[in-house]
Length: 349
Image (cartoon, rainbow, N blue to C red):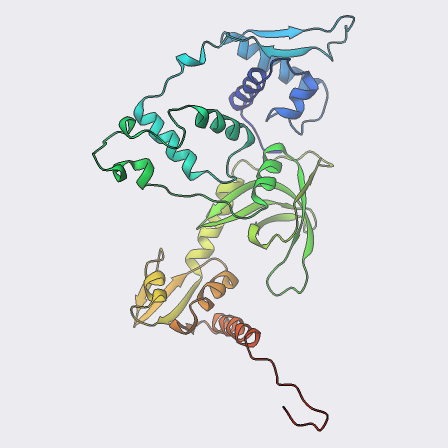
């Protein structure tokens, strides 16, 4: 199970207690709060909950406990933070620079990359007139008379986890739940079902990947999300698992090592779109009129190079030249004109 620091867990507990008028029972909190989710029920979890409540109270947070009449078990007691205990929300103010940064962050992570808690927070921010529709120009630092001077309107990077599996995998990794999905490797005719204990989702050079323990292979694996060809189903782990603390960093380091050592040399038509794009890829070098390009997956780079058509010719290695040729031949065959119908006499019409 992914390790959640005590401070993060306590903050998640506070958010849950604030986000309810009627209160939550312990079981509802155990299933809702990051850090409790996926933990085995028992005294250890109960003690963790009590420690977290004490920690919040030490910070001046008043936790109200509503005990149903006639219930002495404490199982149905409901917990919440009383209205007004944390202060009037109007007291929370952002200066112009802070609003600018928040707005840019929301613009970057605008499509599926936020956790459920962050999405609720973003919704509340967007409901504020200060944020609705972007920052007002008069509140934008460094404003000039031209509208395009706003960083929020000019600098609008996008971090879009386009893979439909992203949210489900990230949520399962956060909650310590196993995932099951169909995965189609290049060269396979049909996908294979994988059962994985997810450790982390990582972004490597523009592509989202899942790092985890493949229960079928009984080993750590990195899965490219775009190769997941089925809905992702999560389930409670048969045996609680803990993600290595450095799982994401170790996976990225390994991918970088592969990327540095794997290259393909191509000849691109000068001035073509292929020439411009490939020349400006990170790490690209020019040797004897050839562009030497780094990559971490031969099938992905073959797909990319085939997309440039006749503007690129692969010089080496032979394996990649063959992969690109196969893709181009499939494209050619798919667009070949249908054979003319043959008459009974055997002659074409």
